Amino acid sequence: MRKHCPNKERIKDGTERIIERFLWFPKRINEECRWLEKAKWVESSQRMWDITCGHEWIEWRVIKWLN
Image 1 (cartoon, helix red, strand yellow):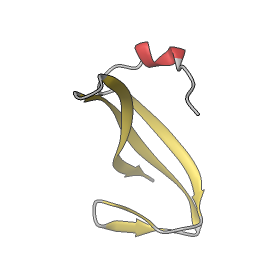
Image 2 (spheres, rainbow, N blue to C red):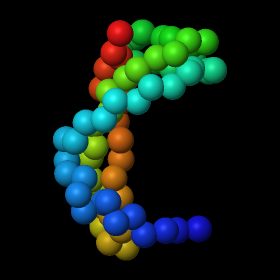
Image 3 (tube, rainbow, N blue to C red):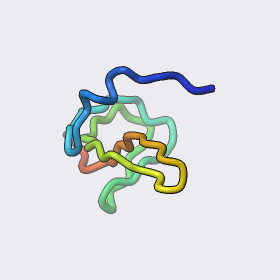
Image 4 (tube, one colour):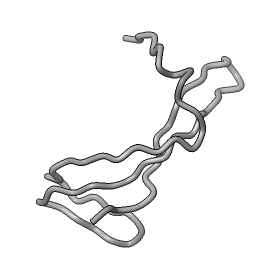
């Protein structure tokens, strides 16, 4: 199922967001692993293109932990 995302045009490359979740499963960022705790981390956006079909999407990549 696909749905149109109207906010995609507003998100630019390098936009950062802070995610806060309880980690039920291990999560590793830069050789540090955390789990079974409430954690925060920073993610950065990157626009991706599929040349074969012209499909565009935004991928969020994890940068670092926040303490």
